[in-house]
Image (cartoon, rainbow, N blue to C red):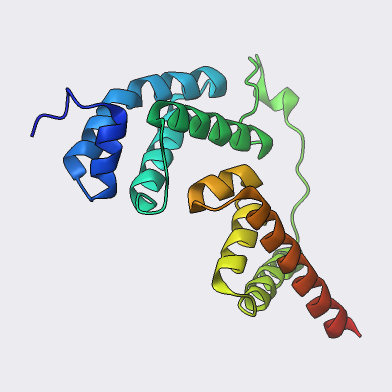
Length: 185
């Protein structure tokens, strides 16, 4: 099937109906621009490729739930959010030229194994507590606090309103606060 003469919206509607050829057409149509955009801001071709790949994987996985009216704008905004998230996470650091690497080395303090265990214990306990919440509420909290998605991103990806996201996060925080108070008290 030739998808070249179809609009992005027509292709997306076919993708929602599990049309892999339509998805491949959207990918081919937008990949280069998104890659260049991500590459411009990250200055890292591998990271830019990873970002664009992640966006398209997420689109395919969430195709049944996403309501996209303007595909080009949606993927451009998604790319921008992914770049910002990577920048905030500190994954992008400026590269400077150094003549002698040894002179510029800074000793990094060793992370004690007990600190690693404590972090691991905390993550396990958090996941256990989140199991006490309704599945959707837990998912929204996880996307917000662990994946660091904005409320707007979560609302768009799950096809729900931003106030619903905010209410679910508030509910999850109250639930976790009560759990923690009961645990320590």
